[in-house]
Amino acid sequence: MATIYDFKALSNKGAEVDFSEFKGKVLMIVNTASKCGFTPQYDGLEALYQKYKDKGLVIIGFPCDQFAHQEPGTNEEIAEFCRINHGVTFPLMAKIDVNGENAHPIYKYLKSEAKGTFGNAIKWNFTKFLISRNGSRIKRYAPTATPSSMEKDIIELL
Image 1 (tube, rainbow, N blue to C red):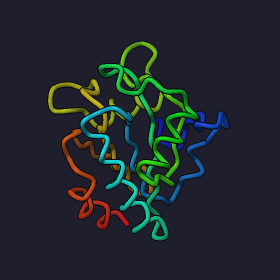
Image 2: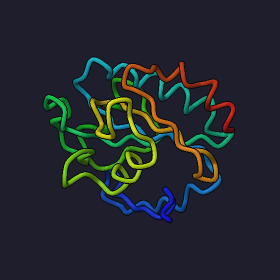
Image 3: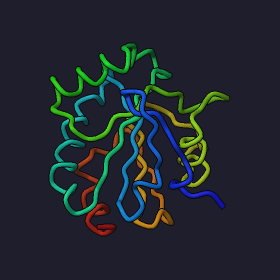
């Protein structure tokens, strides 16, 4: 049976990231976009990352342009936007698809492990997955769930 640690993805700089590097960490994986009504959540995500990274939280952003063309930029443009406008220091991956036949394997896995309210497809940007330190518990949060509303669950897993 696969776990989150069996997957690899490309960073926004093109380097391969082996998710086995995150064993023992609490992970939050988020599909992001720079031109979305939920884009201000970058600020809340970064605040959580700064507050809990030393305790084992890793937030990983996966930019995605599948929803109303709200992430049109290149990986470099996305990273610059996130850094300049939201002070993002948590890891950003290369832009991916989260739905459809070209969906990244990590998202195929996450959707199969934590289904949404209306099926397993990702409905919009900023859907979040919180994964326990051993990878056994995965909880899914709707785009409308603010990062701060997840803090209690993060603390519980840390």
